Amino acid sequence: MKTDNMEHIKIAVIGLGYVGLPLARLFSTKFPTVGFDLNHERVEQLMKGTDVTHEVDDTLLQQALENGFLCTTELEDLADCNFYVIAVPTPVDINNRPVLTPLIKASETVARVIRKGDVVVYESTVYPGVTEEECLPVIEAHSGLKYNVDFFAGYSPERINPGDKEHTVEKIVKVTSGSTEEIADLVDGVYNAVLENGIHKASCIRVAEASKIIENAQRDVNIAFMNELAKIFNAMDIDTQEVIDAASTKWNFIRLRPGLVGGHCISVDPYYLIQKAQVYGVLPRLMSDARRLNDGMGEYVGEQVVKLLNKKGILVKDAKILILGVTFKENCPDIRNTKVVDIYSTFKEYTSFIKVVDPHARVAEVWEEYHVVTHPELTEADKGAFDAVVLCVAHDAFKELTLRDLLRTEQGVVYDVKGVLDKTMVDGRL
Image (tube, rainbow, N blue to C red; front, side, top):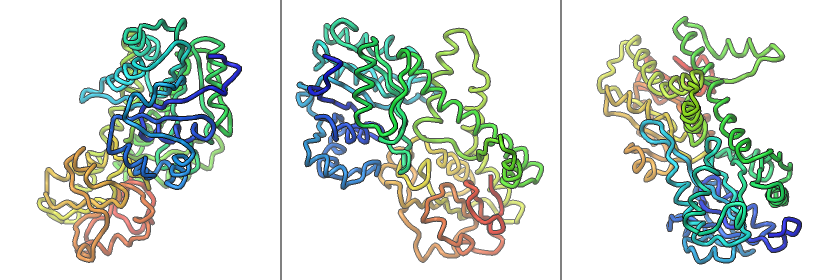
């Protein structure tokens, strides 16, 4: 492929989730683009012009489809593509060990259609070395082509923030890299063609991989510090939010807040670097401790609510508890690795009378993933029905509620996980 001529580029994006779909739709504004996903239901919805994740506005999606954008489950639809972008998940298993299976399978898929001169770019978050040590050998083995001779590669880590309508994919600065200087220039050119704020070209693929992993690890460590402070100040009966407000008056104080750390990035990605560091004989104590602390915050919140009920003389056994929100962040349907489930599990040890309400979460998806029954909205019968109300996710719809009206008595408990409610109206908060 000639790097100084992008007129003949046709892009295939493998994986049409929160990362792949927005990127594919954006690419389709400048290049012929095909989106590939194994989920037939997902592809059918997209081809009808609907994105249930709400990451791409339906109007924009429909416009892209009208202009030739194709979503498919059929491999033959990728036959004449020459620039492949892999945007599949990189989860961890029950023991927090990286699971590369989606990446390996996606690499096998590309290997079945890639031809001489083609380029494959990975967007999935990984530890340094995965692209060249794990993925590209798979393509070589299944295609019969030789890396950096017959086909080439790049890495451009995703920076999608689900539910964020300000930092959309076209507005963010992307890190790019290539397996040769010429391919790095090509990858740079392709992404620059659709981005408003340009790119940062890394010197090599491993640097680009490392840059992504530390973005999330840094936030994880910083939030863990705030969560540890919250535990300390709660034990000392000091309002953590007031402490943060006071400290924030210093010009170089970094204002962060305690909270639940879920989702597809911050709660998962640090484990990839933690594992790889140990291979090199380095024990990343700070990152490991941060992960343990943040993973335990759901249980901590549940225990705090139980203590408040006990202090108020309300029997925790069979108490009626309302949980507001189950997604991992506000105004977003994404339930991946939500730590609200840990709060729910803590309450389940005491009572089965727990109602979970979330206007954004998809009921069937929550049940399938966590076996938790959710409701899209409150009903008239919910007024004055609960012993405790826990605001877990700051959906805009919840901010309009008077939560104390949902309590059975004045002695009931309102707990604000997100710290967004009037302090005088709650009994506890992080």
